[in-house]
Amino acid sequence: MIDEKKNPFKIVSTKKTRYILPNILTLVGVCLGISSIKFSLDQNYSLAVIFLLFAALLDALDGRIARMIKGTTEFGKELDSLTDFVSFGIAPAFVVYFWDLNKYGKIGWAITLIFSVCCVLRLARFNLTKIEQNSEWKVNFFEGVPSPAGAGLILLPLIYELSNFNFNIEFKNLSPYLVVIVSFLLISKIPTFSFKKIIISSKLTIFLLLGVGITFITLIFFTFETLLIMGLIYFLSIPISAISYFKNITKHKNIIKEDDHEDIL
Image (cartoon, rainbow, N blue to C red; front, side, top):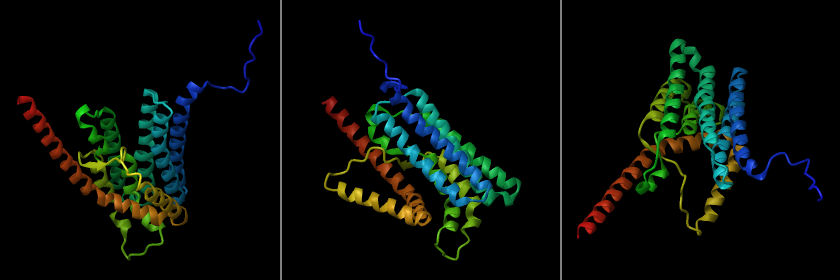
């Protein structure tokens, strides 16, 4: 018998690679989040915000890639949750603290802690949330503001200061109030859009791709201006998502009543 030659360059099997790749992206995300704290200590707030932006992009990609290549695991799920807490519960809170909240002394530190505590509570609740089989439409909504969005919202005053916009308004003074409001939005039960399962007509695909392309171009050349506009649009979308959610509930209840009526007949 001739012994099969083993490939010396084959480090892991294809099956193992499916599980490792998403987790690598997750770990890169947590490194970006921790690095943003370091940049805020150096008072390099522009890089701190940019690193958190990349952390958010990786957070959006790692789960989708894991599902795409069938590499989802319980370990990956828990790792992603812990990474979210570091990157979106601790890092942005520290960035805002070093930028503005520290001047309020103990109150500023208390506000920082409130945000981090609310973020970890929100993540714990999310991990325990299960979608009922007859309520698949609920997958399009989060319960409360998700942690990456919450991180982006508390950074809006800083992003405004880094942008070229000038509305003659001291948004920096609103920072402590905004952090408290967003903290409670994290643990609230207000429905917000998740954009997980969006059905788009093939005719509209070209316009979607065009919109994504324009967004990335503006992010490259007008980073902070684009982030500010996106953040404000998301903030304004919260009441719209709540209205949409309750309309779906009403519609779903009517369908159930019709089905029950048919069963009786």
